[in-house]
Length: 324
Ligand code: ADP
Ligand code: MG
Image (cartoon, rainbow, N blue to C red; front, top):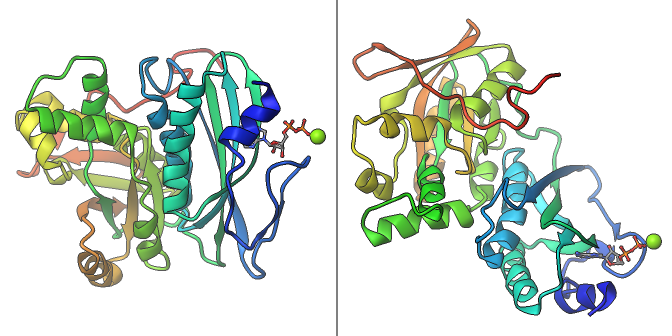
């Protein structure tokens, strides 16, 4: 199988979108952005051994490579449309490619995304996806948080951190709960519907990929503000509660600093809180208030009794501790 038959067989899927004038097969794709809207472009790379363990199922790799990009679009309240895929493979294995493509297209179809191009090369397993979407004049951005705004987070935090331990064989507990966390790690659901509900309501937003503390800090830096976090209020899933002892270090640390949950963390002015919470309740989507924006820069964590609480780790960073 050469490069071109591989592309045709696994990636040249039919595309139902009218805004794709030319998809896979030419030197570039030709795409129509609706008039009056802006193009949102996000790109992320997954490297074997860095972003996923070598024994990760190929279906999960294909799914997650797209999911992490759709999560970035969700955090801008963008409507996803197209994706491109740069795939570097050590070898062309049909079973691997079948499963990889199945995972990728399962998520793409769910959100109406067309794969419109890419690049295929031989080398150490590396998957780069760029996702494109549309935003109107007021996308959700990182830089709008103001003192007094409430800080909220979708879904639950810490599950993917437990999932990583499960993938390493380091997590003991009821099978269903362990499986749930492993699925949260491998098949994160991009919070696109939530991004849409927050559009025009939230003052700022970011997706939680590196851990809540690290990502919230980006949002605070962008807005020139600080935050007070109520660590007892962090949303923990039933599986998390089953697997982690309340009041243990993990109970507090994982939801704050474990990455890969791909929830949205947003700030909402007090006057719009009721409308936002009602909208989420109507759609039966979880949204939890976890703190407040303050004028003084820095991030302070508090327990329910008001006492200060100090996290041990701030989250994941590449090149941490290296010069430059
Ligand atoms: P070129 O050499 O002109 O850059 P390529 O030979 O890399 O083109 O690719 C041929 C066509 O196949 C292009 O339309 C490209 O976008 C598409 N393509 C290549 N690899 C992939 C992939 N992994 N997924 C989707 N489309 C791909
Ligand atoms: Mg060319």
